[in-house]
Image 1 (cartoon, one colour):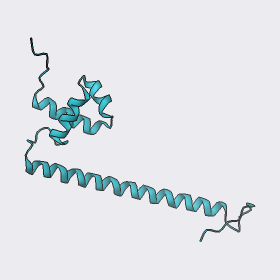
Image 2 (image 1 turned 135 degrees about the vertical axis):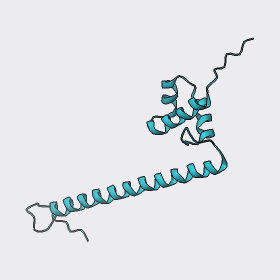
Image 3 (image 1 turned 30 degrees about the vertical axis):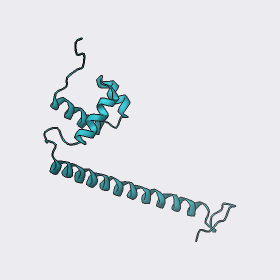
Image 4 (image 1 turned 180 degrees about the horizontal axis):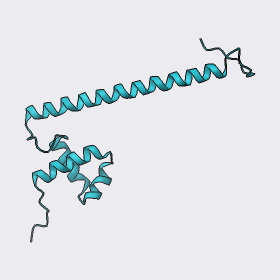
Length: 112
């Protein structure tokens, strides 16, 4: 019985992981888009852990990739926190302006 399994090069696998990491798509939809089963993509993601295609996967490299990912996630968290603070300030200012006792609005609430 012939082996019908498709063979993928290491370069293809690493490039696919890199492209998935930047796509923002769910695993199922990305896997379907490139024509592979989602279990294969999960296996490649676990194996390559999102490292760049030109990097070989070693324990030291795994730590480097994880540290880079942590730094990126911390930057994103800082950006989101900043956005939340800006939006919070806008909402508070809008609320205070709308419900200030000196305004002509009938609802006179004061926020402490």
